[in-house]
Length: 243
Ligand code: ADP
Ligand code: MG
Image 1 (spheres, rainbow, N blue to C red):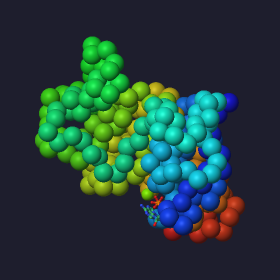
Image 2 (cartoon, rainbow, N blue to C red):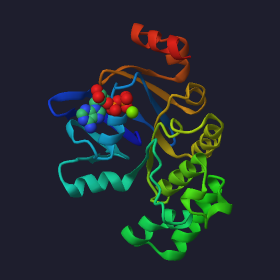
Image 3 (tube, rainbow, N blue to C red):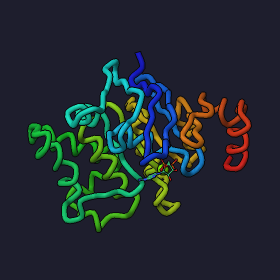
Image 4 (spheres, rainbow, N blue to C red):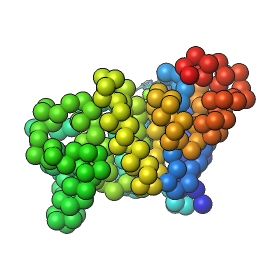
């Protein structure tokens, strides 16, 4: 049984259908990378999974359970199982790193404080920021802030993590520290859907590459299949320009 199955998902902005039936699946611990030109609908796939953009057709299964986004309660069910990190790390500015990580687990989830604190410390270790627990976000570099954002998403114990161009806003010298943190998550067996322009990284970590254009999946397969022997002209054309 796939850990995540996206089945013929459709989404619209107004009358414009921006997802025209998206279907892919990944097993537990696998990473799918969504790639494709700007405006092809990659972010909308992640937004639809989180219930941020309404799904107008299709369904999403997580560990065999069908997520039905038809009510606030159903949207919450999906959000309980997934977390997303966007390009712009929106940390709470007037709080320490530790407060950023523990706010939602304590105040919204109402989880046990000592467990929340110890999990937050474990996650800071995972992203290499154990020494920054008491720092405020404006004292951190962009790469450090994005690693805090990753840890904060993980503090909610998602089954599936969604990452939307999390390195795109960073200075080049800060990209690798964030990619290293994602590699560690991959090693821990986190199931992820990532949108990334870092094709060397995608080739290294992704189990499946999903190439999108104009709201549709044009071709999907292993990184080697997509990058080295694409079957469609559109994929061949896209990868010949960026690889
Ligand atoms: P990508 O992430 O691949 O660049 P997006 O999912 O952001 O693509 O966008 C897909 C399409 O939806 C584009 O045509 C974009 O212009 C449109 N779009 C995205 N967000 C909105 C919005 N909030 N309102 C209207 N159209 C949008
Ligand atoms: Mg996008």
